[in-house]
Image (cartoon, rainbow, N blue to C red; front, side, top):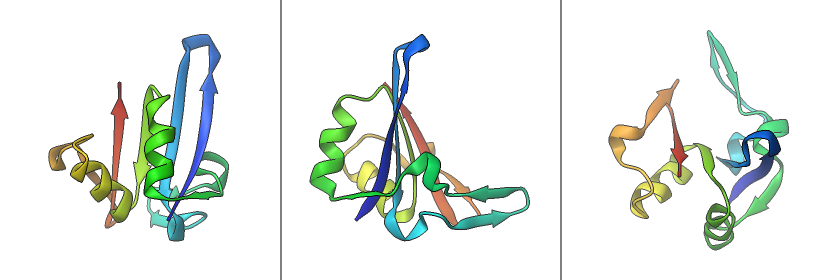
Amino acid sequence: MFCYKVHQVPEKKDVVLAICDQELSGKLIRKNPPFKVSEKFYGENACSKEEILEKMKGCTIINIVGKRIVEFCIERNFITRKNVILIGDIPHAQIVK
């Protein structure tokens, strides 16, 4: 399962979808500099892989963090491994359509 939140950016007409592995929500994954997987940004709404695919359709920017969501996006050819960075030992990537 994943957590997600949709952010509207009306002045730029962008729709940002933030997705994280559910167990990362609210966790500090790096101390210096700090990086917290904030519930305010990544949300608290839980969803499945099928639901996340539907959410991804209407977005212009997708921000993902977590081993399972990153691997899922690689398997679906949304990103490649070279598009992934590590924050601590947690994979992170962004998709811009």
